[in-house]
Image (cartoon, helix red, strand yellow):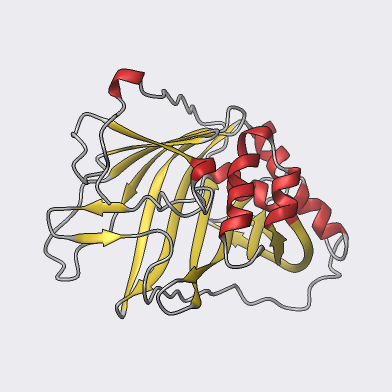
Length: 278
């Protein structure tokens, strides 16, 4: 699996299975507000199933991402920020790696371009020239690029909700000052892959096979127009060395809908063709 690396200080952040990898997977507390309006009960599942299509109609948005894990007793958070075009399923993120354990070295942000079936990374390190991009086929990753790049593709995060089998309407709250409805439930990766758009289907099928379990707990927050404002997924992996499961929590925050999101993919000559150090 591809890792996000910085060779200068020997610090490696692996957004996948790693020895001792653990995460504090938390969810928002909720009350018994399931009956307060028509968003309760079985309808909650249908609302979540429509979330990806609603984003596509919204066109575009700014996005912030975070991926939380813990290794060696140290909690690691990888953060990203950028824009996403939901109609074309393309986005651009600047992904910031955490400081080295000593806190003295900073890492250059990794530029990531997200496209159907592909992830492009610049400033990846690991022997890749600074002016070159690395291209990764997301269908060939065991996690379908839900965590490999250090950020979950925002549209893939919404498409996962197509796999919601059961969901509870927790109640009304706010995300960044916007009134939202909070839903909590579990998505099935196999169902999500079968229901996904053509651009995300193969990657989600790979994730369904590669994760420790096809069940993905989530907390989703939708505004009054049904647009996904925030979603938090908790992914489980097999830890090969300890023969147990580990977890990574991925959060996507969407805002400023309709913002310009012109994403240009690199030319073939700008893509690194050499061997990538592991």
